[in-house]
Structures are given as C-alpha cells and as structure tokens.
Image 1 (tube, one colour):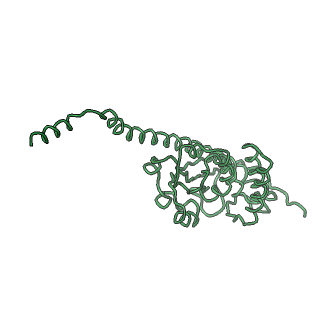
Image 2 (cartoon, one colour; image 1 turned 90 degrees about the vertical axis):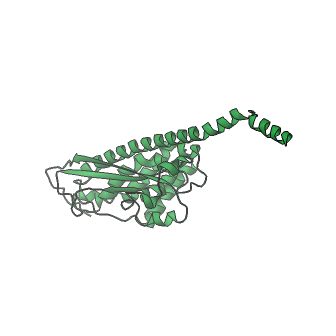
Image 3 (cartoon, helix red, strand yellow; image 1 turned 30 degrees about the horizontal axis):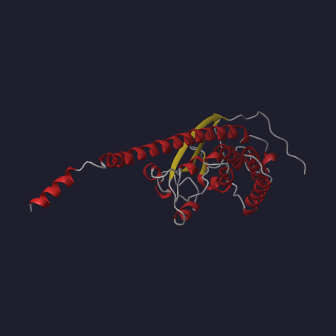
Length: 263
C-alpha cells in the first residue's frame, strides 16, 4: 500500500510537459481570435467596396434614367423596369470571357472583357446598365468556389484572378440593385436613391462559423437572388454576410426631348 501511494504522489508531482500543455490551452483561443480579426478585416474591405458600388450605380442612374430612349431599344425615359437576362445573353458573355482567358488576358483584360460582354448583351435596358455599374466594382469580391466552403482557407479568402471568372455567374445571384421609395417602375422625383445589397461569402476557417450566416438566415435574403440561393444552399452550403449601402443623387435631366431615330 505504501509503494502504490508513493507512486501516485510522484505522478501528480511530475511537472514535465506543463509548458506544452499551457501552449495548447493558450493557442486555441488566440488562433481563433486571429482568424476572427482576419475575417472582420475582409468584411470591412468588402463593405467599402459595396459602398463604392452603390456610389457607382447611383452615378450611372443619374445619367442613364433620363438618357436617349433610342439607346435602350425605345425604353421610356426614367424607367427602371426589369429586363430578364436570357440564356443566350449569358452564353455569349461566357464565350467572350472564355476567349479572353484562353489568350492569357490579365486581370484588367478579363474585367474589360466582362464589361464589354455585359454592355453588348445587357445595354438595351436602363436597369441592366445601372446593374452593370454596380457589378464591376464588386468583381474582386466574388469567391473562387461559390458556396463550397467544406475546405476553407486563408488563401481562398485572399483570392486570385480566378475571382474575375467566378464573378460572371456569382454576381447575378448575389447582388440586388433596388430603388427605395420608388413607386412603380418610373422615377418621378428630381433625385434617385439606389440601394446595393450584396451577399459576401465568408471563407476564413472557423471565423466564418462565428461571424457569418447561412443564406437562409440573412436579413436581406429577400432582396438577393430570388429562388437560386435556397436551391444552392441545399446542395453546397456556404456562409455569408449581407452588406448593404444606399446613395442618393440628383438626376441629370436635359430640358429637351430626344428625336426618334429613323430605322
């Protein structure tokens, strides 16, 4: 009995490995804190870009809404009616982006190709032109793997030029451009308010679980994406942060009527 008691006492008095154990205890909360700070930094960065996107969309709306109807397929002045993007539109845009990627275009070249494709296919609508002005600043925020966060990493959160390609299919569903206070589909006030709402995908490990939500839990989910995201969530999952900004500007209307063009 005495020998057993002595062995037990020496085991509890053994101090070997204490420093390593303390390191493990301190490392987990400190590493979690670092990841949360990093994710907050990416969110703050994205929030600034969304603000810039709202400013860009408002500047576009201020000149596009009263512009010549002949530039928009005869669409009435001050109209913000929604024009659906067809599969043919997206197909042609993808073809142009793919051609730019095959020739080894830089990030700026891919951005110009995206803008050119959108202008060719979507420029017949005032709303789509305003949406394009909001799209382009947000392209660097598109995730490399949309919704697929089963293996998140800091490298994916930082991103590469691949974001410019994924923006082509991510932005139409993650971005909403609306006009608060507007009654109907015609702007009848001397100023226009444009609201940009964006679903920013969080990809920093662990921190995304703490700071971001599933798309179904986003407060702004009704404005973004229609029926696409509920379907996508059931397949690939993902964690998102809803970002929203508004900008109000005076409409730059001209005191004359545009002449109809001859066919």
